[in-house]
Amino acid sequence: MIVFSTNPDFHFDEPQAEPETLAPERQKLRVSIERKGRGGKTATLVRGFVGSDDDLQALAKQLKTRCGTGGSAKEGEIIIQGEVKDKVVALLLSLGYSNSK
Image (cartoon, rainbow, N blue to C red; front, side, top):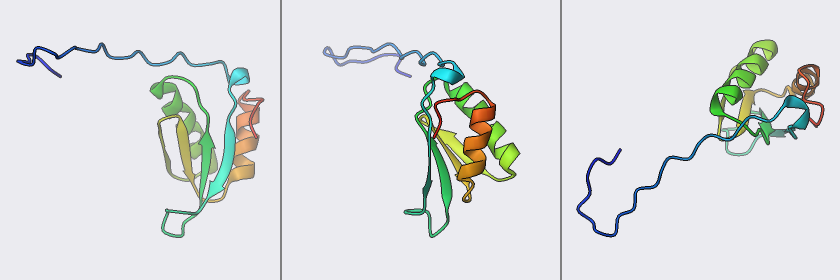
Protein backbone atom coordinates (compact mmCIF):
# COMPACT_ATOMS: atom_id res chain seq x y z
CA MET A 1 0.00 0.00 0.00
CA ILE A 2 1.47 3.33 -1.06
CA VAL A 3 0.60 6.34 1.04
CA PHE A 4 2.95 8.94 -0.42
CA SER A 5 5.48 9.09 -3.25
CA THR A 6 8.06 11.76 -4.08
CA ASN A 7 8.33 10.50 -7.66
CA PRO A 8 6.64 13.10 -9.96
CA ASP A 9 6.05 10.43 -12.65
CA PHE A 10 4.30 8.01 -10.29
CA HIS A 11 0.74 7.06 -11.25
CA PHE A 12 -1.36 5.16 -8.79
CA ASP A 13 -3.20 2.24 -10.41
CA GLU A 14 -6.53 1.30 -8.91
CA PRO A 15 -6.71 -2.34 -7.81
CA GLN A 16 -8.41 -4.54 -10.36
CA ALA A 17 -11.74 -6.07 -9.42
CA GLU A 18 -11.98 -9.86 -9.38
CA PRO A 19 -13.65 -11.35 -12.43
CA GLU A 20 -17.27 -12.35 -12.04
CA THR A 21 -17.70 -16.07 -11.58
CA LEU A 22 -19.24 -17.79 -14.59
CA ALA A 23 -22.10 -20.22 -14.10
CA PRO A 24 -20.97 -23.86 -13.79
CA GLU A 25 -22.41 -24.84 -17.18
CA ARG A 26 -20.40 -22.04 -18.88
CA GLN A 27 -17.06 -23.00 -17.30
CA LYS A 28 -14.61 -24.94 -19.50
CA LEU A 29 -12.58 -26.89 -16.98
CA ARG A 30 -9.79 -29.23 -18.09
CA VAL A 31 -8.62 -32.03 -15.82
CA SER A 32 -5.15 -33.51 -16.29
CA ILE A 33 -2.54 -35.52 -14.41
CA GLU A 34 0.96 -34.16 -13.84
CA ARG A 35 4.10 -35.66 -12.36
CA LYS A 36 6.82 -33.20 -13.39
CA GLY A 37 8.23 -30.83 -10.80
CA ARG A 38 6.46 -32.53 -7.92
CA GLY A 39 9.22 -34.72 -6.57
CA GLY A 40 7.88 -37.83 -8.32
CA LYS A 41 4.43 -37.42 -6.76
CA THR A 42 1.32 -37.48 -8.93
CA ALA A 43 -1.17 -34.60 -8.88
CA THR A 44 -4.50 -34.03 -10.62
CA LEU A 45 -4.88 -30.50 -12.03
CA VAL A 46 -8.11 -28.67 -12.79
CA ARG A 47 -7.46 -25.67 -15.05
CA GLY A 48 -9.59 -22.98 -16.64
CA PHE A 49 -11.71 -21.74 -13.73
CA VAL A 50 -13.02 -18.21 -14.36
CA GLY A 51 -14.22 -16.38 -11.29
CA SER A 52 -13.44 -15.04 -7.86
CA ASP A 53 -10.79 -16.55 -5.63
CA ASP A 54 -13.41 -17.35 -2.97
CA ASP A 55 -15.44 -19.44 -5.43
CA LEU A 56 -12.27 -21.21 -6.58
CA GLN A 57 -11.38 -22.03 -2.96
CA ALA A 58 -14.92 -23.32 -2.31
CA LEU A 59 -14.81 -25.62 -5.36
CA ALA A 60 -11.35 -26.87 -4.37
CA LYS A 61 -12.57 -27.64 -0.86
CA GLN A 62 -15.51 -29.64 -2.24
CA LEU A 63 -13.25 -31.65 -4.54
CA LYS A 64 -10.64 -32.31 -1.85
CA THR A 65 -13.31 -33.39 0.64
CA ARG A 66 -15.03 -35.73 -1.82
CA CYS A 67 -11.73 -37.25 -2.97
CA GLY A 68 -10.49 -37.58 0.61
CA THR A 69 -7.14 -35.99 -0.18
CA GLY A 70 -5.25 -32.72 0.11
CA GLY A 71 -4.48 -30.06 -2.42
CA SER A 72 -4.46 -26.34 -3.11
CA ALA A 73 -6.04 -23.67 -5.30
CA LYS A 74 -4.62 -20.49 -6.78
CA GLU A 75 -4.68 -18.44 -9.97
CA GLY A 76 -7.57 -20.33 -11.59
CA GLU A 77 -6.00 -23.74 -10.97
CA ILE A 78 -6.88 -26.48 -8.49
CA ILE A 79 -4.28 -29.08 -7.54
CA ILE A 80 -5.54 -32.33 -6.00
CA GLN A 81 -2.99 -34.76 -4.57
CA GLY A 82 -2.94 -38.18 -6.21
CA GLU A 83 -4.18 -39.67 -9.45
CA VAL A 84 -7.94 -39.11 -9.11
CA LYS A 85 -8.76 -37.72 -12.57
CA ASP A 86 -11.80 -39.93 -13.22
CA LYS A 87 -13.28 -39.17 -9.81
CA VAL A 88 -12.72 -35.40 -10.23
CA VAL A 89 -14.37 -35.36 -13.67
CA ALA A 90 -17.37 -37.29 -12.31
CA LEU A 91 -17.67 -34.87 -9.37
CA LEU A 92 -17.45 -31.80 -11.63
CA LEU A 93 -20.16 -33.20 -13.90
CA SER A 94 -22.40 -33.91 -10.90
CA LEU A 95 -21.86 -30.31 -9.69
CA GLY A 96 -23.10 -28.95 -13.04
CA TYR A 97 -19.76 -28.28 -14.78
CA SER A 98 -20.95 -29.90 -18.02
CA ASN A 99 -18.02 -28.69 -20.19
CA SER A 100 -15.43 -30.54 -18.10
CA LYS A 101 -13.02 -33.08 -19.61
